[in-house]
Length: 615
Image (cartoon, rainbow, N blue to C red; front, side, top):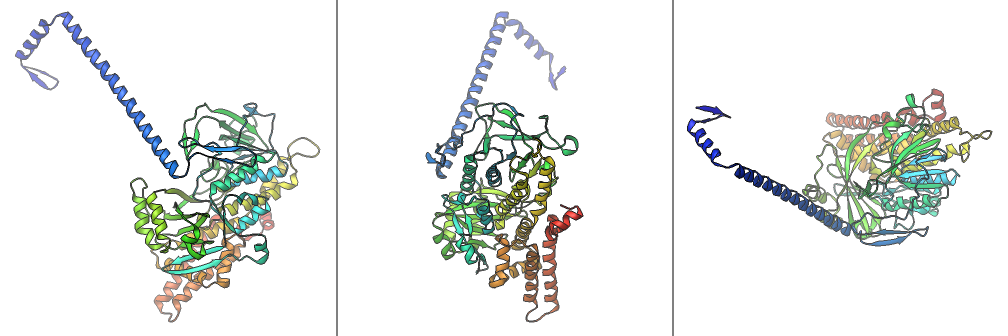
């Protein structure tokens, strides 16, 4: 017996095999080999063809799905005229074209053509800043990744304080002709009770048309971009910024090794953004480099340059899931249609506010400790229908159910991030790339516009071109002093709104801690009292009162009010202990937030901080 490959064969087997091999002629063996080879080639060709056919079918199915989704979103063939006479055309199933016409730079390295300011990003902060600096006479280059209308579910509510800053910057016309709705206060719901709070607007403010504004974020951003595009001192380009550069054009990494920032390197062409996704473009990207004495990074929520210019600690407390309820706000929200509506539900708040004359935005907050339901398998629809729908007002329920059945869900992570810049020479951060707070209170645009107004005033003494009068050189030391002044003076409005937003979210989120839950009830009852009890907190929330001392006073007034509710009518030991838990919970909420934003920045004037060397 012989053993081979684990099988045992007898000599008889080998003899028979040998006899068969000898009986086959050489020609027959060649013919068999040729036949096997031809069969294998045909098999490969068939397999390759099958793969190509299946790929084509998948792509066709995917394009049909996208076309159906776009048709549901109203993305049929449309055209609209802009203020500069150009036309916007959107074709179903294709990447939308916008009204902006861009000319390529004359050379890949614009060393000879120095700009006064380079702005990265043309969102709310970037486009507004480009308009303001262009009006001051500065040559501004603004590079935006995608100039098509953005589709976002946040940044849709501009508080009265933010609208005042918009008027101060001369940009109030940007909320016109976008079907923006005026907002005059808030209505809150909890356990079947209702509390209404109006913005503290006096006769002068009402005569100046000061109020909140709610709208589609993309429409507002496009209006700001049109304003910047029409400015003779502003050049708007569509490109992807890849890195910051040094004076010699090489990549800038940090100030210790490379000195200050001298400009940016960006690609034009190549991959394109379509419906928030990167798709291959027809042309290869071309790299360009531009230089300026000041580079301002405003690339938003998902900034790619933030890590280079700041030491920020980012927290992710929750996600927003957005839906649009179709119908007039007066029918959906009732008599308080011109207000934002907040449902203190389980596990966290649900928001409703009008964004046009025929649409109401619904934002469902899903906190970090709750597993995020999936949208594709229907878990999100089930979560909203079973968990959220029974908690909202009855008149809203049919509209919310209809929106869920359409399935037009959009999700957005909510981030909090205190401002902690590295103070880099030649560069500064602004907007969401610099500082973020929970969007529950809608204070993000108010902070951004307030920062732009402060930055404008600190740069104004340097003149339109940042150059010294005696020479043609840029005044780099003056620019750095202006940046330090901006960091020193931006604190009061920004930190007050940030602290209030983050603290309110923690108070409004349901907790297993009995003391925290009592704080939640106390906050609702405190605001329900109206008068001065509600006027102070709403003035803080609206951006009309930026005083941090008022914030801390009202926050602990709510805690003491909650303790009083527990101690009346009979202060038993158990009730006293619960009251102490309320006070302890309030302290645990506010102290970490204030520490994160900076105690000295919040409560000490800029002159004292400058003497202490703390900006």
